[in-house]
Length: 75
Image (cartoon, rainbow, N blue to C red; front, top):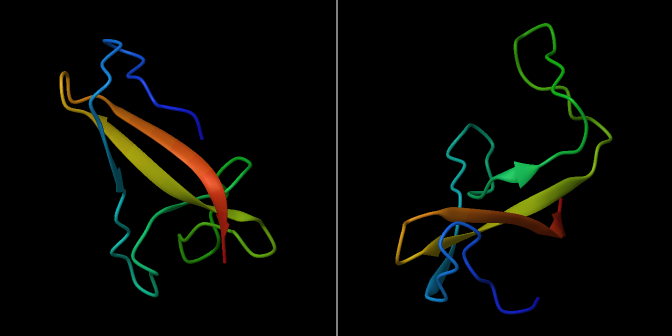
């Protein structure tokens, strides 16, 4: 990935991190799943058979803006 700049203030001091998922059966990080959200009968998201991508987050030190990227497939 190329150097990341803030899309809000054009800042260059960017800290990498992640968005935590603390839900039941979580792997500890959030995932992006393509397609619209569809809920099952118990209220959870229907995701069986769909790809999952880990979300990486980058925070601008200057303005606090977060940039999110789904660049690595998660299982």
